[in-house]
Image 1 (cartoon, rainbow, N blue to C red):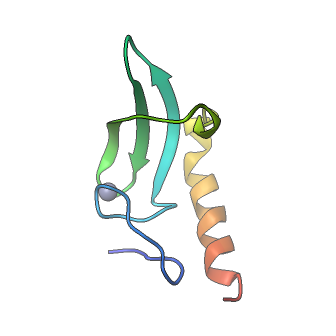
Image 2 (cartoon, helix red, strand yellow):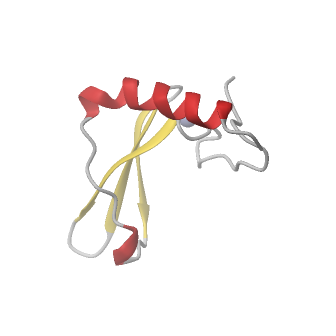
Length: 81
Ligand SMILES: [Zn+2]
């Protein structure tokens, strides 16, 4: 099992850690906002949350997700502290 990648990091709902877990996008249906995650341990999953408008995630190009993840892991594991 990977992660946590820095001290004090909290796991996502599935028990894995960013950036193994990435928020892909948010979308609204009639009365709620759904948040789509991709976890490389679990595969993609969706949660339903009440999300503040300023917290809306920019949709991410899923074709780039693996390279983005690798970059984030490197950044997190090489930053002092
Ligand atoms: Zn997971």
